[in-house]
Amino acid sequence: MAPGPVPWAVTASVVALCIGLGATVASAVTAETASELRSAGGVAMFLGGAAGLAGTYLALVMVLLVSRVPLVERVLGQDGLLRWHRRLAPWPISLIIAHVVLLVVAYAQAAHAGLLHEVGVLVGTFPWMIEATAGFVLMMAIATVSARAIRSRVRRERWWAFHLGMYLALALSFAHVIALGPSFVGHPVTRLLWGLFWLLTAGLVLAYRFGLPILRSLRHRLEVVEVRRESADVVSVICRGRHLDRLAVSGGQFFEWRFLAKGMWWQAHPFTLSAKPAPPHLRLTVKGLGDFSAALARLRPGTKVAIEGPYGVFTAHARTRKKALLIAGGIGVTAVRALLEDLPASCEPVVVLRASSEDDLVLAAEVAELVARRRGRVHELVGSRSSVKLEQLPQMVPDFRKRDIYVSGPEGFVSTVSRLVTRMGAPSSSVHYEAYELP
Image (tube, rainbow, N blue to C red; front, side, top):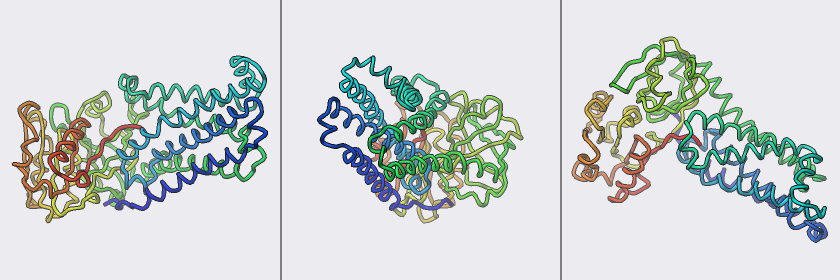
């Protein structure tokens, strides 16, 4: 079983990041003098510099949020980390735009020149400005594509590959910040600390997003041994590997899977284990909803597999009560089925399986067996949305308000059910779910 959450990690991280933001703003304030502020363009120069420092700092924090630091991830989970990532996203972009606009205005005022003319001077004559401009353009392109209205029309794989350009954009902007920023010129200690923060961010990304997954993949050497069809559009992929008894994973967690086959090797997708590891085998069960998931049905035995993870807080560690209610919509049964293996017999689990047809009740027999061992019961709700409604939950599970409630399935289903059970009186602290989505 994976290690449990470490609650103090989030508090410590928030405190450290707030102190860092305060120090960043303070370095901009202390670097200015009264005479510089009174000079032509002085106020715009100060505001532009402060905005740039704060915006870059927050951009690095956004990168840290998705760098998969284990202590923080085990508390917030992917869903929580990405939620904070999205909330924070408008701020660094807005501040960096303000930085660019204000500095162009400041230099134009100081030189008594036009704005367009000053743009050419800045880019053409200042050191590292060509690279910084390229980074800014790339950052703006990524922000545009990430807007909800545009992102919803872009294929997931293409958006993900494009989003990785943010690492390059930040790297391109690094040198001009150190070389030109008033907070750094003549301030070696500030320059050193800022450089260390950049190195720390880069190191965490390289270690947890790239290094650790590579080492874990090499250690376990997973390969596909069987693709088993569970229904018309659902398959289970069984992988064989080495040292899987040392793979610390909890039921309900997921991996980012990269299948090293033609047309698939360059992209990784999140899929929950549909059973805890049974060395030397791992199993994931996937519904063919997109090009990638549909292609899994065509995998050949011997295909090598790289993994990143395990991730997620949809685990037995989240329990706060003795008994549990697990609600799965469609393919969300995979997380519930694996989670059941970690639940004790004393929790007397009630499982509600929601599906559009009998064929969609995949793994139902396995779920029923696990529930029976734990003295629980299973309810199967089959039919259209109009004919089957979860409002009947109080009749099926009269004590649901006294149970931990785990909800898994498509994002819309999870959102609807989570709101429903809290509206019917379940404390929000007892409702556990996790949506798998890219930042």
